[in-house]
Image (cartoon, rainbow, N blue to C red; front, side, top):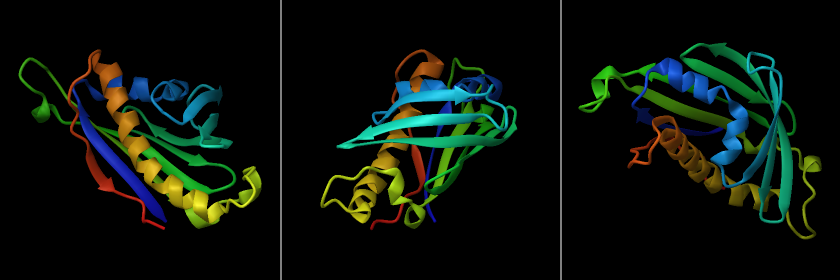
Length: 176
């Protein structure tokens, strides 16, 4: 199982960060390859999301489901078809990391785990002469960069301004 995990510090309390992260349809605003998110539910466990991706000559819609929440600390999710994948957002109060002029801070962590070998090629309309293994080899590095991009953009929206964001990469996918 491959994994990507990134974290950073946001200068807000966990409750505000959680409320922002649970609004999953917004994620299309932060991602280069996620073009739209359609929600089926209210964000609580059991809510499903259609994630519409487009990259290169491919487009794909993944279905994810919120499997558990622990407000304001964690949101767990899984992909429900075509690939074995799951992940979570976690939020931890770290007031000692707040800079001067800020009252509080939270560490926000995004973890994505996936088994590329479990991908079902029938869900993709691959161009002729393009193999699923080629696509997986190209997409794995994009996943890490995309996770970093999303977290950086979320911090800017949460805090209301862009700033240099120190991202810690805790896990990277294996290369093919």
